[in-house]
Image (cartoon, rainbow, N blue to C red; front, side, top):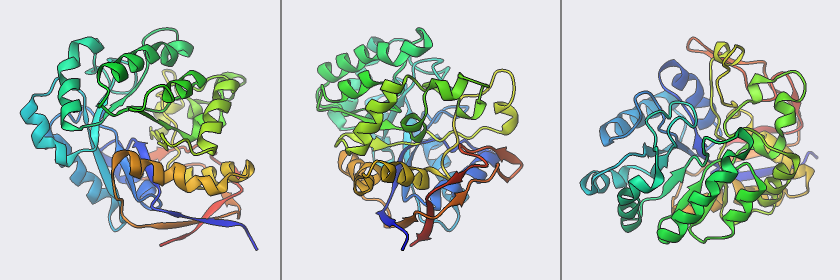
Length: 338
């Protein structure tokens, strides 16, 4: 008999769905196997007011079709008034802060953390979580490590503000997670598996290039151990970021790894390899439910150690997107969705 596990209401706590034709392709590929996801707001223009948030949510609902799926919406960080936050609170899971220019479509982001403290204070008082792309503009391998000072500062100054360190990539970030009770974090599939050597150690692999970039083996090991042990303030967040193939296989390659269609199967394979399959439920759903106080749509996903051939690309709606592990065979696959 093949080994299997049934996951209850898996959640992706950091997801890019884009818009337009790309949304129509990408949304069903997550909604088929996940109960819900936190949707990133860095569109052009950014999702930085309630009208844009509600309109975008409706486009997502339309795109997922018949799949049962909860899009947890986030606002793009800017200086908000108390009235704006009060009206928007019930419609969002939190506010996402991007340092200006740090990643895709972040030019309208924050230039100085201390300049926007009034909004942090209102968020703390109103119980609105802050989600942060934690990088500086320093040397690329040190950007996350340098930003940890800002997490330390924010966690101390606003002790009742729940702060999510998004897509952490370093051993230093894992240590920071244990320093303050109001810090939590997401980690991606790719950062649990690859290092910078996989991206650029041989022939450059554009489909593994993302921001923050993959780091050193010791960083990957620290992240992996925290995930495998189901650290109570660590959640799965794919940061799955689809780009058309012509934006990846080119000069000026766009940052983003597309993992949505293979994430659950690949995580099962990874946790099984380390004999930690029983902890996958906590990592992929239970922690997020507790930390954010959410109750996702009931969905049961059975994953079995039967092989799955990853396609070379996902194609539709005038889009052609190459996934992580394209053309490779995974040892696990989704066998039932209920």
